[in-house]
Length: 337
Image (cartoon, rainbow, N blue to C red; front, top):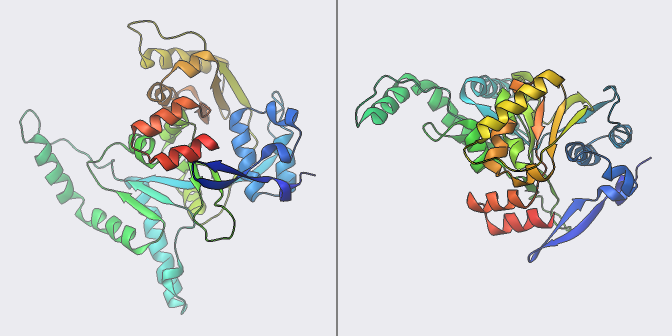
């Protein structure tokens, strides 16, 4: 039986110390080395949250075995967009009303994990071909959606752990990749021990949530009920998945783009059959791709049928974090991890 009591170790990141899950402490080095990186992320998650039987099920992962072991996956955060996010916020508000009717404190009803809602699905083009077209379209968008936007703004103020990215900021997946994704979380709980650092993982109410796997963040799309359950601290039940490895070699030739590459990969994986599976990219060709190109490939996971298309974290991810304005402290913790 895995010994989870001894599975934490302290590492130094710059002038800071953090605790991390040491996977090698709960299983032999060989048992860990043979696991795909996406499965290691799941293993780290169940070590922190799951039962011993779930840990054993993940450690015992076999490449050709049919999925049969169920685990409880607890994502680090939940990503919403405005169409699917409004019902989630309405349900939270309804729970507060119910709490008040029962004589309790409604302020106690809050998401237990960070919830980020990006308003990007309300864009309509009424004006075009003129210098003020953008301003006119934004004005009309706010007029049409005033009630929804006011409700979402209230939700951000009323609930802890809720952040709303306002309209006209960008597409949810781009905002997630460039701004919201932590890649690595560091807990802010007040304890005598160094903060716990753990991988960023996410479920979102959009099938293309998978785009963030290009940055080494394990994530995929779920339904609204699953997202709400995750918001309230409930796990996402899933079978330990099969993983299809895709080894990339060489570099893109001049004139070829990530779009050309992803269309080729999509055609190949559709023919192979990857529905319901994790796809993990590796090899020198994967290392040579920028995070932006990786994100293009990861974004298309729904098109090639996989649950997600994962690129493990590496130095390229650290470069991307710096390029997109993450703090040096955040990057140093990431590099130490």
